[in-house]
Image (cartoon, rainbow, N blue to C red):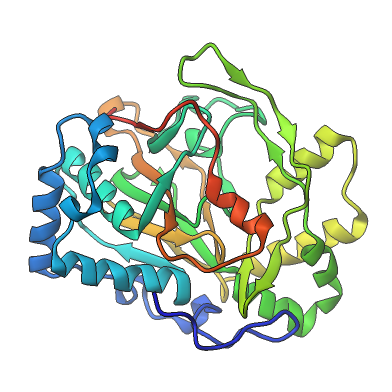
Amino acid sequence: MNRVREVESLGRPVGSRRAWCSSDLAAIDDITSTLSSGELDDLVAVADDLPSRGAEWRGRPLQQMTTPRLSSRFEALARELAEGRGFILLRGVEPNDPERLRRMFWVLGNHLGEPVMQNARGEILSEVYDRFAGAPRGIDSRGYESNDELNFHCDGGDCIGLACVRPSPSGGESGLVSLLAVYNELLAKHAEHLEPLYHGFPLYVRKEKEADGASTRSASVSDRNLPVFAERDGYITAWVNRILAEHAATASGTPMSPEAVAALDCLDSIANRDDMALRFRLDEGDILFIHNLSVMHRRDRYTDDPDPAKQRLFYRMWTNLRDGHQVIPEHAALRAGIRGPRPVVVGPR
């Protein structure tokens, strides 16, 4: 992967395409990626050729899941994630066949990188739906397993991928914002808030049941802070998950300082501005990948259909780019994902 040409450093604004604002972008339809008919044919062919059982997909070498056309196109998409805007949106890849979409999503995710576990159950390809039927969830429940509003945050791995099987009948709009554009705004107008963000925050690690349903991983607090903004070898990375930082403060009995709270408040206020955040709806067959070390994502609360066959359903994946940049150890640790008993590819719901 070609490296960014601009040398980035903390204390200077980021001038590349990585620091985009929604006000600089055209309509969402104009910034999506579209596969050619030949690329789509190749993707369908290699997806359909996967073994019948998802458990066997992990043993399939990448060389058996590619073609020259796919390799070239997906390498360009990986560059866009690491060195461009930090997200790719493929519209209408497979709107009519959920199982084929799952297979195509797996092939794409594996071309971009190496999938990692997303939860203590070991899921490397999971399903996103409301497991609580609209009921409140506790602090140890994962946001993607509910219909809650999810404020701007980052997840594990280099990238998070989502594939839409069915959107909700109402709500559930997605949002993206460049953390590097937020950084530029902080640097220019609110530099007093940068020091707490450079220092970062410890994170809460949720208590979760493992794959057998009986074993439970204990909750804990990380033993080191995760900086929001950092730089290594001329490449700035950014990562924040406010709710996990707040849970860590509560669980450890060490409240955040007023300066830290003010810094996060300012970051959130900038991120949610209409000129900063890109908002759109994912529809059937859409695939979205987001670079967690430069872009935050969010989701509006949604209302589901009473018919289970029509309820909102997405596939989800965390993946590490195959030729990712060297980053500080605290950000590199995110690439480990969440430790589980064994990797699991979840089948159709």
